[in-house]
Length: 326
Image: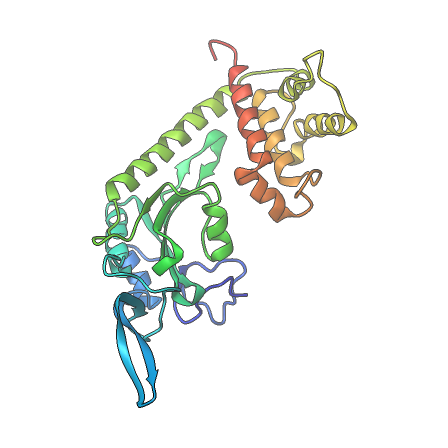
């Protein structure tokens, strides 16, 4: 299973679960390892050259090849593969893989992250580099694991984009999922293309601050004792007299109440945190609703669909229910 990966190059620290271990370039992490070390193993330090586009003109006297003004192909240096789906103009600025590696290694050398993966998609038309940020302390003994992903598209496929995400990007499918709600930043291929590390660091700092705010709210919710049925009714709007209770809504209510008091689910039926965990469990496992019959459908819906909206609104509602002084 290639997941659109260019099998001629790429390397991973620890193999993705679906990977064919006989052919994978899997590298064991070692102290002091840089993204450059990983990129060298994966043959990802190639250059992207602009080569003038040519056309063949046929005449009664024969044929001749001429250059097309202001049009270039993007060609990978080591195997001469054309990696742009269309030609580019003189103004197009190439984002060299080595430039991306060198700038991301600023994070690695500063101790903020470690290398995770580097690979090409669509026969080289897109290059991906990922760092695993240092694990952050999560609520109630859990941990956050975040990744910093940079995906560069060559030619007309798009800009270079970056994202801080909880999804480990190891193929086209996971890249699509990680960027499903949009990129944190984009860099167009102007005449001087380069990463904006200041902006990227701001995104990382904002993500870290958001984690800290979530952790604080989670701890307060865990200390807030409530009646589970009444709290679920508030989440679903069933405390409003004009709310019509359909069979589907009643089933959702019953499911949430059960999930909020389920030791196998890590809940004990006592607090606002139990209710929030019931919501996340529902989003992950309940297969009712459009697009929810498969785990992938529920996963996508939790990222940027109706399930995401339900979880976000539930969190906001539960935070507002935390009593003063807690």
